[in-house]
Length: 203
Image (cartoon, rainbow, N blue to C red; front, side, top):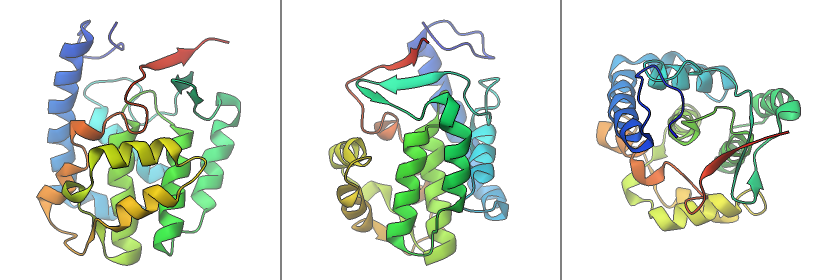
């Protein structure tokens, strides 16, 4: 079953194809318009605006905090009852060093604030923080997919691996469109939990 969507698509594979096409087009618009530079990097408000822009043509929930509990495999993302508090705490986390920024990114992944599209939105959000604070971004073409997925899976317990993987791919080419676009490549959609289907938890 496909997620309910504005396109009226009921086949999940077809929805995934359309979602990829539309979100990539919108991500490119975000980059080329300069709108990303106007956002308050590192805030949930910025992440929500990125998510809204990428997915507004597809989902009614674009930019809105999820209203269901979610899990992938044995990992449960932040429960609804704690989600808003978690997002407020993430907003307050420092982001002046590389380690602080990645720790913030890991916490946002654990929060998983949206029903769908968290990974793509959060990678753009991450690059915006790095760009603002360090004048660097991640060159996603230099990030090994499997290393990244495994490191993200373990990051809630041990974040040293994801820090190592991403630090090795830092670049000062902060205005390179191709580097930016690699961050929303389909290879990274299901970071850390690729063998499991996202499930909605029933109370």
